[in-house]
Figure (spheres, rainbow, N blue to C red):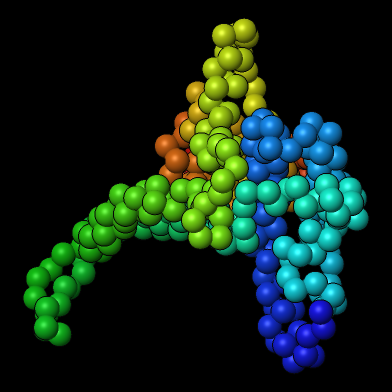
Length: 308
């Protein structure tokens, strides 16, 4: 199908770029989760599942993000679909779409990305509260004339005024937590409108996409081993690390010297604390011991972690 040049330039191209940035990771996670469910429910054969898994494994998200929109596909979904077809053929690739629709896929992608936004907003409120509390500590005795109806009213302190703002931000915590819980729901299985006649397992895809199934794997590992270490994906841009952090006894954040921005380190710690994870400390790697600023940079990250 060919599209009008104006539609390609001002609609489809922008949509493709936005989808690469925001929805590619959720889309791939949905593909994997749905495939696992189809295979375990015997809706697709073992051979088809293996071929589809191999096709998905060949897709590099980094390479996909470099692709420029050329108008040959309507959007990112169909572009990924074409890549899968090229890897395993039309018939097998079509099996991946059994018992699902663009409708429930889209809604699931949006929810997965939105929960990231909620986490980020929570982290930002924690960071703002921390900054305000730093100011409070420095201005306990700084006098401030408070106004009411544009008139001078009562004397107070800067600390007193800022603590009122901090308290307002604290009230956002239960609201954001509730927003996260309402967002973190799985529409997969609704299909186009009324569901499907295939014997799908919606609970399984929900667990896979929410990492809840990981709890069972961790429990089994703990029964066999004294210490279990989990190497998670990066904190950004997906929610996996944040969710895994709620299932373990403690989290050690790894940052790379001269590569990890300070604000991301602070935001990562705030996000972990939003999830009520226990942050044990920070490991700083990629540091050149012969560099003159080694001690400074170690302190730079350590203070961020300790003071967050």
